[in-house]
Length: 325
Image (cartoon, rainbow, N blue to C red):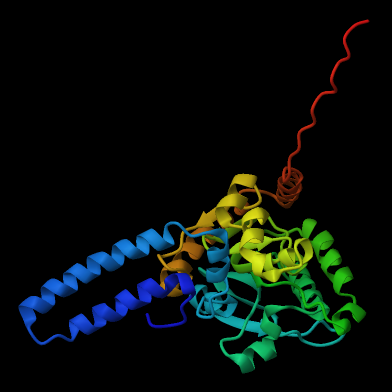
């Protein structure tokens, strides 16, 4: 793949170029030997670089412009998918899409943030940063799913909710808070998968459910590394340091009990083999639906409540005892 590369991937790109040149050689015996040697070197280099990624490098992969987005998963996992639009109050937000389709023959509602592939589409999608009408649309559709007893599949991929004046005037914080409350008591199964960026309240606005899966190179955080660095040190260049401190990677969040499952990506990220990643997500959804089908709505709600009550832990030291006088 000769697509977009980050700085830490440059050695891999150079070796891939050498491999391509070697395959064009004229002498067949020498060419085969050189190609085989370079292929071994390339595989070793990939494993060394991608096997020791820092949190900041994983954030970069989560933002890769060729990474599969929500509509890509809809195309891979669903049949007969139909988008539904509008919040019935203001308009339709194209940064947060929703619709119905059949997953393994079963009707489901799908929601998710959607980014663009080029500048024009990114402007139309607002770079995946939803407005209040997007979250109100999502809540409207979730109510429909509850009415018709359809499971809800949600794909999270946003740098954060849009912070502009218009969004604030239309109740951005209220719409996110309202969604969190209503999703906590939604009487239908809710599956979540963080497929790229999981930024702050923008992610939480559709981020309450019964099961949270996360792709290996995605991140999920209360704030972006750049935003954190700007607040703490007034220097966005310290974003790599902030990414380390935020504990935002999938493996960190698995240890902390924030996510339930980490889905391993191919070497280099989900964009290297989107079909394989889609099949991993398919298997994850099937496991969740099997679990959810075995539980009545009351038990599902209780499990959801207990799941969020378990998040977070603290310890308090016992007060020192003064020596007896």
